[in-house]
Length: 637
Image 1 (cartoon, rainbow, N blue to C red):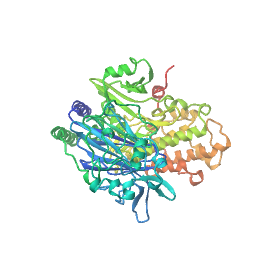
Image 2: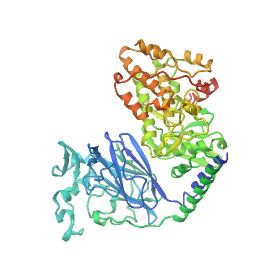
Image 3: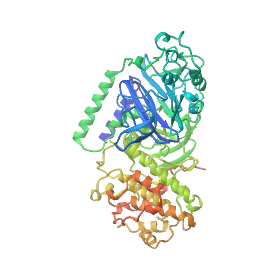
Image 4: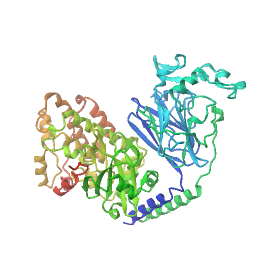
């Protein structure tokens, strides 16, 4: 209880001083049909990384300190040679690694420059002055006349002048600058042409300017390409976006000044920051954390509070307005109630809004969920829009899933609701989401409550993992997680979470829960056998007949019947599920391997050893628990 109070005090203190502490959350999204490798270069202050991989459909959240001044770009077509040297076709920083410490490229790359909290505002400029490789759009969280979405949607590789095309293997992959191509003083604006009067726009800069008018394409560009925003603004950077939000301005910013026009002129601009406030709070946090750890060794999420601070915070009045005074209930559970609503902005986007039932009992879950979801951004993870923290009122706002939770599709007649391919795509999507949480997120996140009720489905039945109340954030190199109490839902809890005798708790605990979901998805955990297992509390619910069927090469069935061409998919899912629920965590594949197994052929898979029997805690949840959780996010009629 004392720990929860400390966490709540920390959260509240951060929320109240958020007006004093400045900084921004940068969300970098990849909507290209290829993997990209973003580069972060800093002149002043630093971000947590200088380079990383971002697969198609993934996103990463970074926190930029208030005084950060730097640039962000992305590399394409990267690989590692036999000597271990990492390089890219465009945007290569020549470090030899994915990280780019102290280096970046000026050739055929789309850039965005950021200058945070300088002169009371934060500004950004997207530039194609030095070339181009990817479409890029920046969307601010607080749009205004001087702070609008900007970027370049068109594929300049298709509009690039023929003589400036950048090719590899006969394919155009970028557009280099005319200065780099011809290196003349007239084009590069050097020597006697180092002035706007002498260095006029060329046909090359005009081409870029016409295609992307809100980007910086000319050495003596006017102020139209620099956007100035409030210093607390967060930004979303999207590579290969499909559109730019429709916000406009009638006048340019009075803060926008002249931009540097060459690599040599780009220097750090020192600005003021709330260093004293940061220091005081940091010291207070360290003192409380160390004191608490000295009294009691247990898992803690203190380092994650900072992620919570930068989220969009709504008042309780906003919550009532968004939900039309709580008119539409989506689901109820032990944690509280979920309502349907709409964002209070021009988009009017549908949302799901979860209000905690007992804030005193759910304080830690509230912080866990905010901290986890705020740094996770993936197509198979539910997106977080914000939260409410007002007195005893606490709410979490996230995207609405029109098809509710997966559990409502799992029934005796589920085969009439979902075909085999849909089940496979759901299993694969959840696997990719877990792989992202374990391996690609800013911090490793172990969910600890993977079950059908926590897998939501959008309008296209794309699965999204939700409910991070029991999640644990860890360092990426942590292979073992320290826990004093079991967490999860009976029927899906890994053996080691219940008893140390089965091994160490780790991300493999999520793998076990995932395996149980997959087996349930394909119908192998039939309701009849589930009822039988409920009365037999001495063993884990595990259908022995799966092995018998596999050994006899009998058809694996979905809901008692399956057409012949679906047998391979069902068998593949069954084998993957069986591997995932191995009793020894070391025998379970990591989620990255699970994705490979699902995407590969069934002929490469072998039948795993039969798991040993496990304690009664593995029995199926009670009728009351099932009745309560299955209502989660099921639209009411």
